[in-house]
Image (cartoon, rainbow, N blue to C red; front, side, top):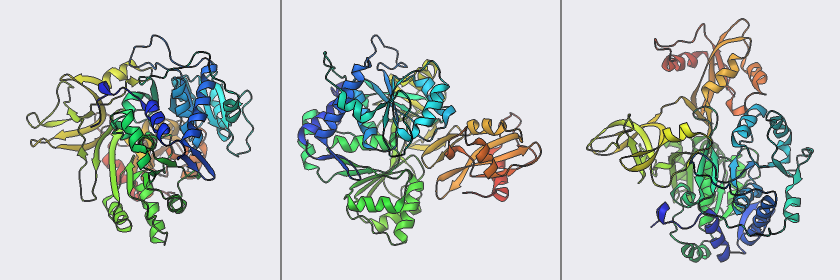
Length: 543
């Protein structure tokens, strides 16, 4: 039985060190020709920890507020690579808090994130150096230590940055040994479902439990079990900068598994299937239909299904029943789990069968009444706010108001109240009704429509804009826009070009259409039903 947070005397780092004790020579991270054992990863992350400690980074004394980080922050502006994973572990060893950085951000978006996180150090792929330098210029009072990873891009390093490998090679043990704590933290930045991204502060003690699918109750149990799992080779296909992929990876590691990383900047289904075959992948993480549909197209075209694949974990976007059923035809013994959750709550519900029409609530999932005063139940049914209990974050980084609004004590139980609506039926069953906010989830990326609208309205040719999502086989949902022009109408490609320096590519509209005016209700809120019906016959070219 998994211990509760209060009873769990270890965090992620202590757990992985226990695994490394047991399987030191087993492959830990594989990417192409790079094959690192658990012993090598422990050595490299130890050296990274020494380097960060030598810079004066680590635990912050006297931090008690739940919305403050007790550890100095280290940003990871990296594609999937051994350095991404090493960056997290090395930070833990120095008692620093790693945080994810979306490598698709443009300078203004990145500057907002850096201004919010205030990192002490940034570990980045060299190819991202120019946008990082531009972003740092927009935050003049921020001067983090810059560590660059050579990615073969040929881009010149930022002046003053240090090579990652040189940092490791030159690191020496500190005079006073550092003793990491299970209460040190990892900061997970959201995809911006309620505006700009916010950092969620997770203790490593909590992350060594249900949020990452970790079930061991002791370090001895982890040491004993790991040698039996040489078969466990796990492939996180989405970017590790997204929590679902990172947490999936952490769950596989806790069992003594090997992480297999792809080398492609974007998901390529044929290459992913080939990698799974060549590396005997047993577990794979995907993002709903945006990954499942390309995989199915490749399989239909004759790609050989990897016979080693036994488990697929999907999260972050809808997985259609038809895609699920077809995957099971190619993999008759496959166990597929489709999970619902958020950065603030961890997993809340799952589907384990294509015939299961509703998500099944997890053991720590509740519905909080609209007034946040009670937990709904069979004796007190109704519609309210989906919430989670159990292993939960401390709060939102540097945001007391939002921390207190989201993390509440209801009927003596600490819960995280998400922006999703749910109902409790008279029989006690929880029904999930959908997100309250108008957020577009496209290929696992969460896009806040108002952010895109504000940029579009900043164009002199655009008088008004409404941005929303429509179903897409490729992306699950894609960004589209209804526009009101001041004169000449810009086409979709012109709009994308004009906004390219302000928004990441995945936020730009895939299709646009023009209307005389955006229809709104008497209360000023947009009529989204009208918008979707209007967009269908008018939509321009999509890509």
